[in-house]
Length: 261
Image (cartoon, rainbow, N blue to C red; front, side, top):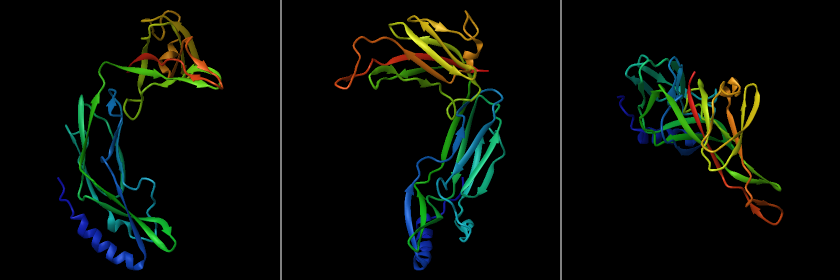
């Protein structure tokens, strides 16, 4: 655990100096610390740990930005990489977890970080202060079986045409990019036309209630496994889409079962 800098006192000293030269301090709360992706990884995956206090800002060359750098200590349990100590606004590195679970902790030495920016309000330079900084632990896990995700296909009126919107299959930052579709199921009480878009084009099929498509089986192309977007449509006689009435079709749901490949 790093020793936390009494940020309020430091900021008071900083502003006492820079405000004379022309400075405006904008406080910007930051909730959560760091980022680890994917949160659920496949065996053999490379995982990226990073943090970014600059976000949309740029620290200008005519200011001593290093004088305001925090110290960040990044650790893992069980240890997946050597403890990392960084003095910087940003950092990013990769590691290869071998355990079923790994916790990555970002431990910062202060409650607020001040960033000189390249922005001005007239002749006044704008400083941004990231506040509410707290140590944060990300708990990541290895995928060992399948992951089921219910996809919602909202009903909308596209002009005068009732349609159900496609839904994207889950992926980074939550799931590994190496997840593939192993089954697509119709959980509605009516037949639906499902349409899957992947790397080799689009595949569509009529799917009865409770039935599933399996890539590579029963005439289903194996490339369905690489689908990233799923569409679902079914006639809804109650839907009304016109200039005088907008009653979209009922929402539909499908279930995508995915696994590491």
